[in-house]
Each structure stands twice: as C-alpha cells, then as structure tokens.
View 1 (cartoon, rainbow, N blue to C red):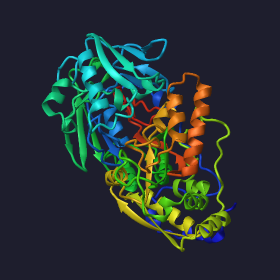
View 2 (cartoon, helix red, strand yellow; view 1 turned 90 degrees about the vertical axis):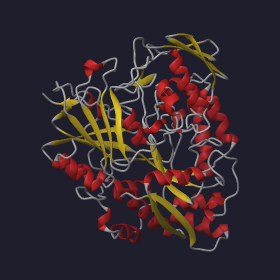
View 3 (cartoon, rainbow, N blue to C red; view 1 turned 180 degrees about the vertical axis):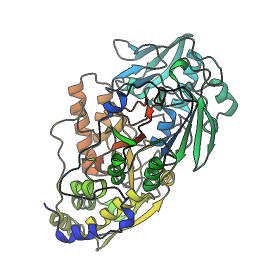
View 4 (spheres, rainbow, N blue to C red; view 1 turned 45 degrees about the vertical axis):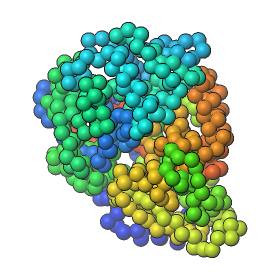
Length: 539
C-alpha cells in the first residue's frame, strides 16, 4: 500500500529543527551508502607515535563494569580497554584474544577447555591467569547484579586446570558460547581491582587492554591512556584516548568538521552527506548485526527479570491492537523519512544476511484499512492512548513523531515522552513504560539477539514476553550444531514472537563513523565498535 497524501504531508510538516542539517530528506531513491567497513579496516597507512585522539560518542555510557553494562557506547569504550577471551576480525570470524586458541569442546558439548595467553598483565600490573579468568566468569554468571547471567546460563562450573587453562562445565551443549565470550561475558577484570571495589568496579575499571582507564566526568568525557602493561604494546601508538559525550548529532558533526574531535561515532544519517562532502573527512560504515524497534510492555509488571504480570494499558493487553499498531507503520517510509534510506527495514531481529535466518520470514506491509478493522473489533474506544518513551536526541524524537503520525490514521493517540538514553533503559528494565523506542547492537551468533531479549525473565526482555513457543526453540537451537536446524528453530521462535508483538522491529541499524583523513589505523568491523589499538595520526 502506498502512503496516503495526508500522511506524507503530515510527515513533511514535522518541525525542521528535528531534521539535522546536511541530510537529504526522504526522497524516492535510496542514497548511496558510504564506503564499506573494509575501507576502514584496510587503512594500513603508517602512523606517528604519540598524541591524543578525541572521539565523540553519541551518548553517555552506563557503568563501565563488564558485568552490569548494557549500552553500545559502553562497548565502544570497552573495546579499547577491556579485552575478552575472544574477538571478531574484519570478516566477523571469531578469533582468540586473551585465549590463545579457539575452545576445545568435548564430544557431548558439555565440557569446554580454554587455553590462555601467557605472560599477560592487567593494566594494574596484576598477572593474568586462569584464577583471574575464573573470578571474572564466576562474577559474570552468579553475581545478583550481573547482566551477563543469561549469557553464561549454560555454564555450571568454571575450573582452573592449570595457570594457563580453564575448563567450563555446561549443563547442556551451548554452541553460541564462543560468541558470548567475544563480548562482555568474556571480559576479564583485574582480581586486585575487584577485591578492592567489588560493587563499584565500574567507577575505576581495570582490565587487560591497549589503554587504561584514567578518569570519567559524567555527561562530559572519559579519558584513557596508553597502557604500560599491555602485552602487545608495540602496536599502540596513541598516548591518550578521550571520549567526549556529544549527544546532539548536529553538534557531533560540527565538532568533527572543526577538528575538535577527530572521530565521531554513529553519525546521524541526516549528517552523513555533509560529512562526506568535507574534503578533510571520510565516512565508513559498520554494524548491521543489531536492530531497532518499538518495545511494547505486554507483561513487565514488576521488572524484566521478575515473573510476568498483568499490565493495564489497552495496547499491552491486546494482541489485536498491537497488530493494528504494526500495520499502521510503513517501515520503508520511516527509513526514507527519518534515516535518508541508509538503514535496512525489517521486522525480525535476525540480520538480513544472517546464516541463521530462514528465507520464509516475511514482513507485513502497511495496511491502514485492516488496522482500523482490528481497532474497531477490539471494542476499545478511540483514539486509543499510547505513551511512547523516546531517547531525547533529535533523531529518536523525529522517529517518535513519525510513528505518532502514522498510527493516528488507525485510531491511536500516541503521546511522546522523552528522557535521557540511560533513563529509558532504566524504565525498560523496571517496566515503567507503555511503549519504548529501543534497540540492540547485535551479536555475531543469532542467539545473542534473542536469548535475554525475548526469552522469559531475561534482563533485557523489557516487554515481558514469556512463551514456551519462544523459549523452547531458542534453547534447543543453542544446543544444536547444525546451522540449518538452528535456522529452523530460530524461525519458529521469531514467528511466535511476531505474533505476540512484544517488540515491533523497524530496521537494522548501520553505523556511520566519521573520521578526519589524518587518522589512520582504525579498525571498524561488523559489530560497529571502533578499535584504536593500531590507530594514530598518519605519518
């Protein structure tokens, strides 16, 4: 169905202040994407030693504690100061990082042996060894405040075999384990720092990494400096990394153009064209593993990790109304209107090119007539009130207003409530919301886009979805090694989740990294995390 002239006019009339300068608006043709991530990863120009690199982040991270952190911007900082047992490379292939080899898995899949790098030190000079790995993994999986519990739920015991070997005993085979250990669940923290400041580790984090934490000014900046104890110190050229928190996308782009920062993360799609046009700057693309959408509170009455309960909103109580709400949305028009066509519209959490994505997953087109029928059949008086909570940056507010206009045609009265990004996450966890704009940065293994996000009582399952038709196939897929069988199981779970509509997925995000052309050696992979271990000013 083509969008109505009335809707197009309403979208065009949204305040221009919400559209960051430098973009093209929602034209009929999709703009060409900036250069691929290979262009960034293939930048092997020699770099000078020393200097400070100023990097603009689009939001203030939550606590810099690998056990509790939940934000993408936090992962960007971690990527340069907290190494993991495993990582990914430019082809999104899992590789050893603090481990010395890929895991050895027993025939039944229930014992996983990990060999560790030797001669490694944490950034406080403490020796990195199997005891330190056990301490961190046990904290991730058992600490009551940990957001990693679901990531490592299959691990029942961590055993020190010798100083350079740990063995993980699993309750069942868990194929995604290596991928989980390539993210925060695999970050190893200094045992000395944990002993000194267990509950407040994030205030002064100490890990293994090319850079070490120096200071943080909330809402302003995070300072890292080159580590004297890093095992591969010869690679590291920069003296200092300074992350500057610049939420406004126009200001972030302006700071890049002025040279106040040399790198800017997650450029708003409305500013990409203007940055590309600057002869002193370049733009590279990464990401695509994650998604963004509307989380609807259908059963999160007491908190995401608590037992699901009844909610009072009409949208939360009625699957029919949630279907009507989705049918009122035009994902392609949202992409063009809000994002200049630079994202990938979709209605599932599996990336479009994921090997675990079944080919029969199809998205509904906008159908206002059917949406109206469903609203009328529900018997709920119109207009149906919906409070949509949005992060307070200009792009999210623009998206919220587009959703407001689209769903109005079907009989919904959406009011937009804005809050700082971290505050929206707190509302999501506590269940204190009606509908919420929220995304996930994505993982290489599809399990990381589902477990803990749509399974019962997952810490990031803000909607409160709880259904055996979702939980069981996801659990079975995690124990399955055949990719085709895993894809089939994930498809079943995603189809069931699509019926419940606790999350109405809108698109897969692409991340656009702006950089001064004087900066070289940045690694930018499919996870969208800029790595500065080899970065510096081009010689």
